Length: 131
Image (tube, rainbow, N blue to C red; front, side):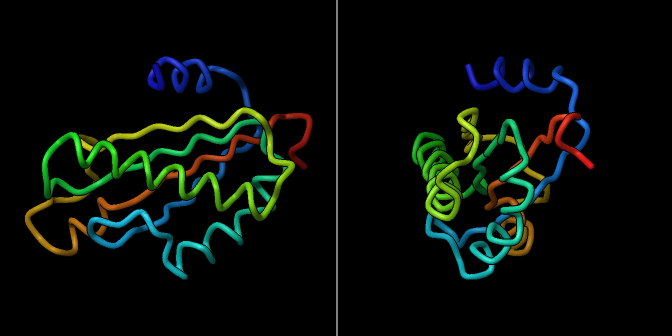
């Protein structure tokens, strides 16, 4: 379902897309201080966005179902943080969880696994709002 929603959202023209990546500790959905700082810095984009896609990811350590749940928990942690900081965010927030795929680095090294434990947030700003 989220894949169809993401595909449909990608087809809507926007003037600007801003992407933020927040990393997590192994097995955790708790935001780090660096993650909170990155999200706080992105609030200007969040205020202008008409949609926000939040995609939770994991590394390949662990079983598929727990990783899927962890990816979802990470995405919700980001969503909840943004909503606490900016209660008037747009209603259209898409949450995706990809705990079993979509790795951006090798899971064979600690650094690769660190890069894969992330949430990607894409803020889409409509043409009428962008400067």
